[in-house]
Image 1 (cartoon, helix red, strand yellow):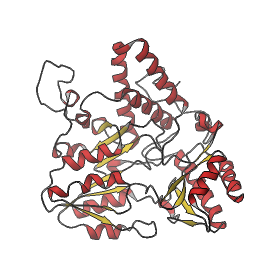
Image 2 (cartoon, helix red, strand yellow):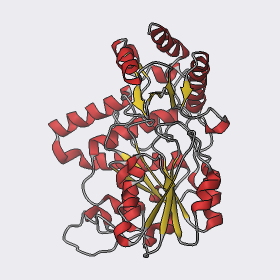
Image 3 (tube, helix red, strand yellow):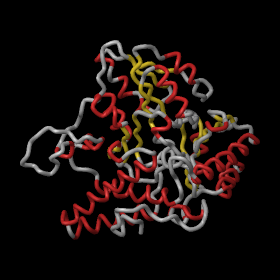
Image 4 (cartoon, helix red, strand yellow):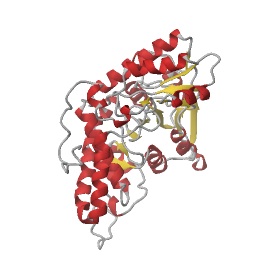
Length: 397
């Protein structure tokens, strides 16, 4: 069992024995059944996460709320672990159900004035567009920058900024193209232009290292069900502490205030931490599962400054890209240095992407269709042998 399943909520999981990918692969039951290359959609759960969820289920079924204090400690363990993962302080971490919630909390809570604008990309995932577009009724313009050839042009992003730009909101990794931005370069751009930086981190967090303070990130949101290998409905929000009181508090409830569970004391004194946005009761089972997943990744050495998981993921996607090139495939984004990610989306001449996905799924190989192509997104437990299996199947036509 993972540390949470065993009831230890005060320390990180010890490093796993063996190097990647074998150490992580031993924790992924799905590897015995499928070749899973769809982590950019919904990841399968590791065994420690399953165990933590089963442990919670047994407690909830057999003991009810008697063990609620233990669960609450587990949530604080998750908060500390998430903070450590991105180089933040625990008070800067909120536990949220999904990325959309995190983006919406900032979009709706920011002190906008009519004539303000935000800058984002035209090919962002909908969650990083609709909350901003929804501000039009308040006189806020959303500037959506076209992306040509899959590459994000930061010069074009900066050119779209002016004295009324309040936030630049970008995804760390493009969900369809796989292009990974230079987070620190965007942070510097925002400082130069006098605006704030919101990072949609869902397609990178859990694999690639990130120090939010060093990189100049002001806000971050990410659901845990992709690269963090957690359950759906459990994610993290980062708000740089100096911005906390700039935002209008939303979703206020008993969990938002200093009095907390003292329900006889009604006093709107908000907690001086990002947890003020958690409002009421949490998705306990999902959050405890996510805690086990993050413990697993921490045990593999994922930190704000390094990540063996990232090294394995890039090895796999580089290998797949080389083989795709030999097949004459077209990639939706070029593979360029630090802009590479765990996502490779391709088109094969004369082949229907939907038919390719059906063929691969019938062979036990899970991929996804995005933006008119086939998207593969391997994790650190996948192997080059599995990449070879994919290409063997593609060769069968």
